[in-house]
Length: 271
Image 1 (cartoon, helix red, strand yellow):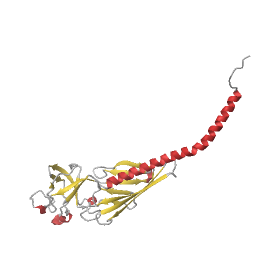
Image 2 (image 1 turned 120 degrees about the vertical axis):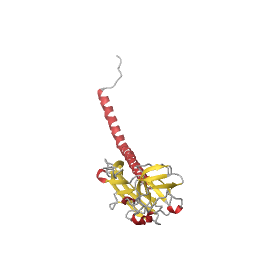
Image 3 (image 1 turned 180 degrees about the vertical axis):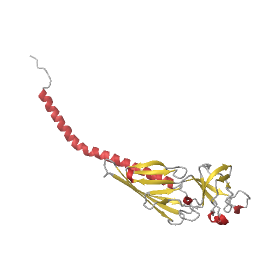
Image 4 (image 1 turned 90 degrees about the vertical axis):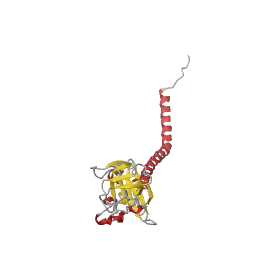
């Protein structure tokens, strides 16, 4: 009588038990390196997110209107006017007749740009002209106070017409605002980077002056657990500043896994 090949039920159960034991042993040794890989990938993602946010802030701050960078007392936000372009205006001292930027008569709202027009082009109704900005709190030289900033109402060739002329004041004392280099900057509006720790976000806000009722907001980074800005003006000389950013990100599912970046940005303040 021929013997039939095969496995008995008991043999199959024994094999399954042995395989299960081996898999369990392998899993114990594999768990640590797999978890380490997952944690490393998560930390890399946090580092990339923090680095991207810091570099975005740095790129924009380097284009800030001279002497416009300011940090609130709590260090939770930094604000500045980003410059779009700039140029030189025709001054009365150039003795070229009409077309100069008038610092004595507020009724004269048009001036001539010397040389090539700024690029990107000045956009009427959106862009503003700033002259000789010396910083927040400086009388008649503070763009935040509206002293030396004027909205552009029209552009024709090399002639720029302003909606009003704030550079001139009664009695002609407005001449103190003229730029020694006869330079002007083109800006759109202030921009802020804000630490929203309640929602664990770093935000970029803009378009928060009239006619907008509320700011436009974009999320720059999430999982933010700590964030602080510092600014030191007049580093080495009166034409430079140093903005510091301290940013900490943590995983939502593992709060102990954190990445902290500290970055300093040199700010040029030529006037």
